[in-house]
Image (tube, rainbow, N blue to C red):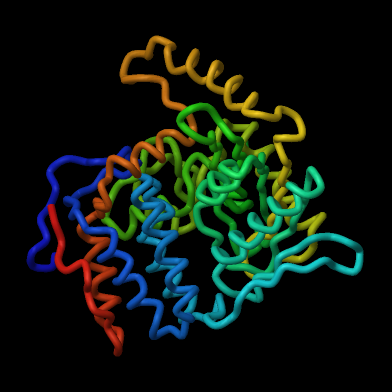
Length: 366
């Protein structure tokens, strides 16, 4: 642990990890600078490095640790291995068959996904609906971030993706013990009630692959019932997953079915996958159906009723998808509570930079 950092005694977010060590509280500006110090010497253009760093910091502040600043360790390894290209930028285009697509040109997928949501919502506002394919891109970040912004513009968005299972064998099919499919996420965002949009954003596996990387990085245990070892036995040790194990599908046969549909959309319909997944984004202008704030009024009536449901034993209240992340971000006060081991790895990697950036945030707080 770096001098000046203090370990926090309490877990400030609803992490899925059971840590063996503690956490350090890092100002978001400091985390962003460290990420940019890691990406800069790898040849990543400043604008892309800033966008990726901002995105990862936002995910951590939102309590989505699996897609937060820990991901920079994975991205750096992928850049060094040539899995993703540092200098490329995404392009939006209309194909010869009239399909809309974003080509990520083999680079990190966060800018490509942002471009797809921007163009999809723009065209949905003009035409009522738009469908955009996203291809040839690396990891695309936390999809709920993009869906939230789109919902604020009045767009309902539906996103799913899959493909290249021969390289990304992570999840066992229902009834099997061998990893066969990627985690093949789904994300749906809709303008919500008075507290903002409602966002569904989940992997079709019981746990996202990012949580397993985060657990390995932090020396932590995984939740019960999410992962099996190579013999099909339940395990909480992330190393068992990396040694031939598998993640279980969420909801058994239902999660498997959703993963399979995403795989068919991503590869059978959209074609061969070059980097990670192929994605299909559908954007719908909700104002075509409920204009003049009627959707928000109706949504709030539904959401208020659900929030007022008596909580079950062990729960403080019923939480609404999308509101939890937004509330966590607000309560974080620009501090990211990072597993100590993970932060030490990020700092060590940033220290390898030949041109360290000035630390305007200076220091760390508890």
